[in-house]
Image 1 (cartoon, rainbow, N blue to C red):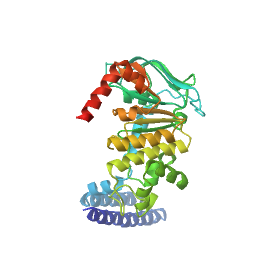
Image 2: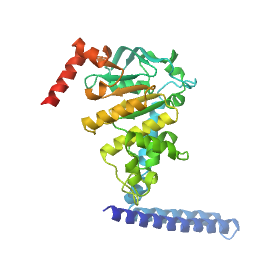
Image 3: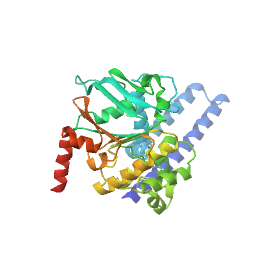
Image 4: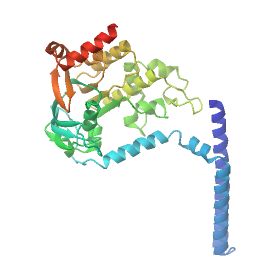
Length: 357
């Protein structure tokens, strides 16, 4: 099936190229004839319109759906990502201050309230939270508690409805969003799987620049995909989509490691804040725990925020906060929170009981 689609796509492209070249020559010939006074302007216009009509008709008869599908397979996800960024960028305050060297002290949520546009209920209502620079923090809570929303506010996909977020005492709204994004490596559960090369997928923060193969190989080795990349015929130049000639298809678990490599590559380029929003949900518990152990060791000294429903992962961070009803209701280390016997301890015991069963 894939081979047939590839052959069909090549036929379509070849046909379009021939048609385009022929039409171009026809337009050039007609234009020169008209400007040499060998054809009246009215005749020229009518002839051009006729050519356009013929080209349009041939497109209709030539299965335009297939043409559009083949033409946009690689760029559609990138266009959707760009559109999403543009939509969010239009709704946030655009500061001008550079984020160089940030954070060196802390990131603070100060009495933050937030509700999504078009909804009456608030996700956060007076949230106070401090993230010390260079430490790891896990955010836990029931579904809908606002764990992912907290990350979206931190990465400035949205701005708070009330209150403010500060970085080293500077209001986040005063910082240039593009400069702040350079300081962040964020991987979400629904991370992008782009029909691009392996190098472009991992090196997304340097998209359009020459590939830094040394950096790519370093991060690939750290997340355990170096042998995977080496095993592909075209290595880092392999297209991660079977629709392309000699393209490859990565499994769900392999894609998650590619996404983690993407975050580490951002660190190679200067990111100091890492956000991991359940990007390893498709890995088994043992593999996830081993990967997080390695990841937290590699990123020691960076400000890291982890969101995970698995306590085997959460317990590895420096500090844990529990979010409920739009506020932080508990915070401390894993051992401290278990000893307190409150919300965190009950959630931990419930999950532990399920694994025992």
